[in-house]
Amino acid sequence: MATAPSKCLLVTGPPGVGKTTLVMRVFETLRASHPHLTIRGFYTREVREGSERVGFEVVTLDGRRGPLASSKISSAESLRWPTVGKYKVDVASLESLALPELQVKEGTDLFIIDEVGKMELFSSSFFPAVLKVLESGTPVLASIPIPRFGRDIPGVARLRNHPGATVFTVNAGNRDTIRESIYNQLVDMLHKH
Image (tube, rainbow, N blue to C red):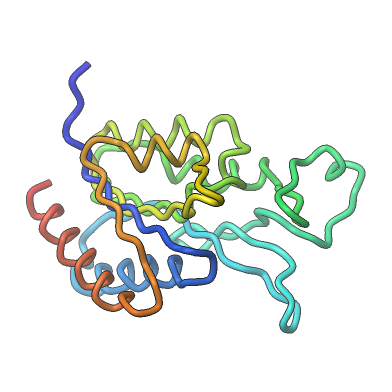
């Protein structure tokens, strides 16, 4: 099956460097400059209690939210949940919010997927949905974790090595330049799309 060259921009970088902030700034700038665009997807954000990070939540671009992972939860149900470090991952919550946003539908101009990482990949239906989005030829802006100890998560490696994917590695010094560059490339793609 011949697929259109993927139009996929991937943002990567160490934890805490500001990948989500960068993705959201690009999204907000696009929404302001091109209000007619249909942009679908989700982002993940930290949940804090005071200065302590206690988990993550999934937020859809239209503002619906639900838990992704928590270090505080302890219920009979959560005993069976996968863990990443000190966090229990609520796969059902992720799927109920993120999967509908990743359905390939006529008229979607851009997908934003923040992020494709270890927590998200515990869902067996998440990565296939991401691949379908890529194969649809719709432009994608996604964030992925940086390899740890030289090892990449298999799903992340497939994305990083996807034909046509462009990877931007963010650090504290280049965030603004990268943000502009991604914005300009997306505008260019959207005009061709």
